[in-house]
Image (cartoon, rainbow, N blue to C red; front, side):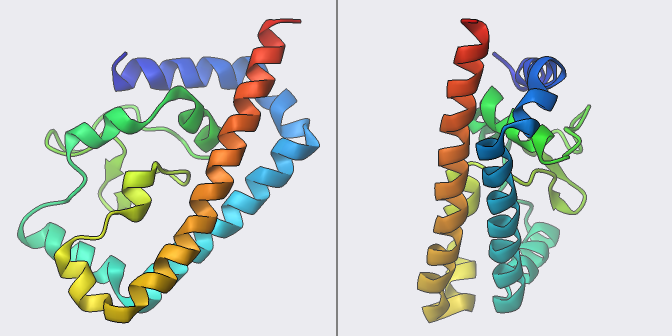
Length: 162
């Protein structure tokens, strides 16, 4: 299933079950926890210069966010983004980039492991010994997203079997 089809399916699930999922205490708590974890990751990345290096590199040689990255995103993580208030893109910003990459970087809040964990050599040289702390902080984001995805899958399964 292509990225546009996965987005369409996520929107349909959101239309059918979004309000119900958002009223679920466990889902709501996990979404709030994920929002905080994502902000901690991005805040630390800005603090140690990761976002600056990525912006510079993108201007010089292009983004690491290649088209194939979008294939890592399943319907559930796209649904999580919708539940977090993200407007999924209607069209690709640039033909050579991931569908979710925009003018200012990633347009998603909940991201796949590759997008959270990948650090190129240029970034690694810049951050040095701060890599371990970044991985710890990002790990909280990834763990929360994994738990949330699992909980949403359970709810969707139960909705389908009512």
